[in-house]
Image 1 (tube, rainbow, N blue to C red):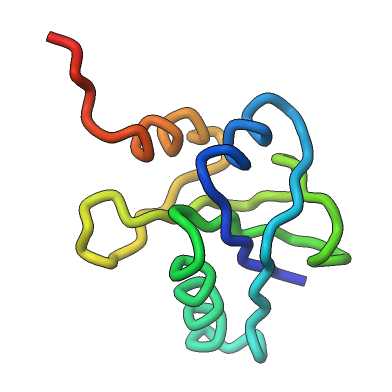
Image 2 (image 1 turned 120 degrees about the vertical axis):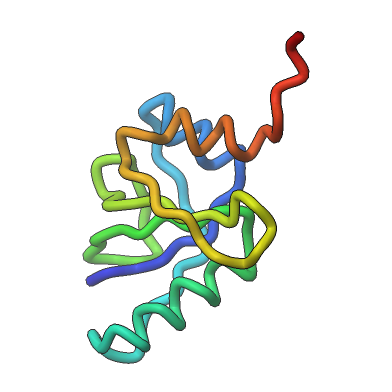
Length: 102
């Protein structure tokens, strides 16, 4: 089943390092697109990022192999940007904020 997990920077760092995490999971009421979006948005209200994943047990451990995409509000508009799992480093960079390097 598709689950939307509310994750923070710490959990994303663990996933990027190849570890497993547990996080609050939000499940759509149906496979309807509107229900899926509602579950995604609810998860986003509980953390800085959302990991969309295919899981047999939404309460079980999650690894990067389970994740199908990441979603986060990168510009403060409330619109969630989509990231592929291969872009987890970009997600972590976006959460770190603008670079202070000169």
